[in-house]
Image (cartoon, rainbow, N blue to C red; front, side, top):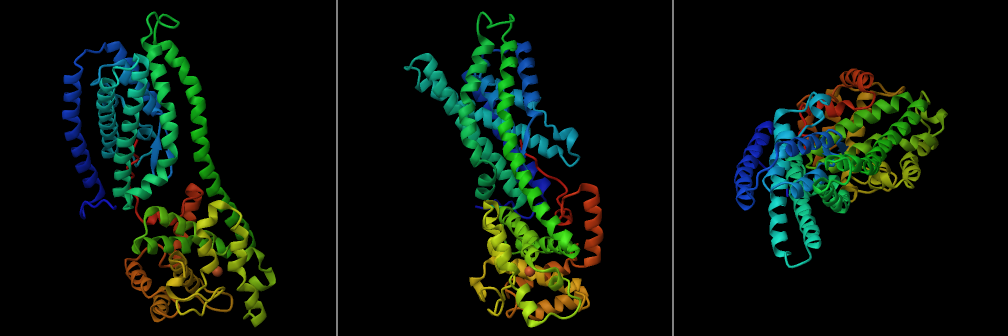
Length: 465
Ligand SMILES: [Fe+2]
């Protein structure tokens, strides 16, 4: 399923989505108030509101622009402490996203979205909690409350991830399911496991007499300490992803030390390949894999002796045969790292040709992995415009003409028109000199981000949650 809201610009779609959420929230809060019209004490509201703001400001970032925090636990606890109508309003008012001061691209519509989606999610969760508590009333009170909060928590989580995943899917133009899987599935379990913590918080806060310190807020604050320790493990997961990115960078730096030309080559191939992949309809998750595969596609050149790799004149047949082993050698090098598993076809088959006259497997047409076909075209264009000691660089126009002339022989004839269309929109990668300038400035300013992501124009990010 791929959400479509016509050709509106993303901020307009986001505001429309926000308006829909606001329309849903109003009646939900009124309904919750009708079901449970008890009042709430202002000091309790202030304490829990500050708690909401505090836990939210310690959120962590997940892949594909999503984030997660312990807001889940605090809101579920608030559901048990307060009348039903309070938690949605608490999060609507006190939600405090650290991106407000950390990220200059954080927008008003993103902030409004974050408040509204959390409020709607906890409102639906509150409704389910109320219904479940009614149904479970014949059970022992503690068991009934525990099961009801588990049901409410599950629904809260489900509505929350659906609303967020939908927004990200619209933003990244990816299928909802890919976004869902990429961001949330691994967390589902840890969320539900944390539900009893919410129950504990609520009991600690409302215990009469207070557990210690004469006020329920103290034990709640004290129990936040182990909770922060648990958060460390979530951070580890994200750090692991970062470490993987660094591994790729280290690999590229190793190859760069041997052949200074390769790093820029792989950056530009990745920029072209990602644009081409998008034009070919690949979603954001698959495009990331294409980018990774393009970055490491020539890693097998590490195994090629310098005297061949840097030979100034034409290669002998024997030397060329040695060079031609780099795709299989690259695959061999990465084969043992599970994180590269999915991009191995790119590494192995980026020198295959549509007519079957490529190497190492001589695959033809559709038998070549589509990602490898994309990288093969990007690789060839970059190589043509780069030149070699024995061959001058082609101009972008000459290189495009060669790509067009080889559609259906060397290149996938389905990809070539897409490539031409992209080329004509004058992307940053079309001219090698322009790319080199942008790339150098990007490297000196951030140290990592490839220019492709800047060039493709992500001016604003939704940053849900
Ligand atoms: Fe290659």
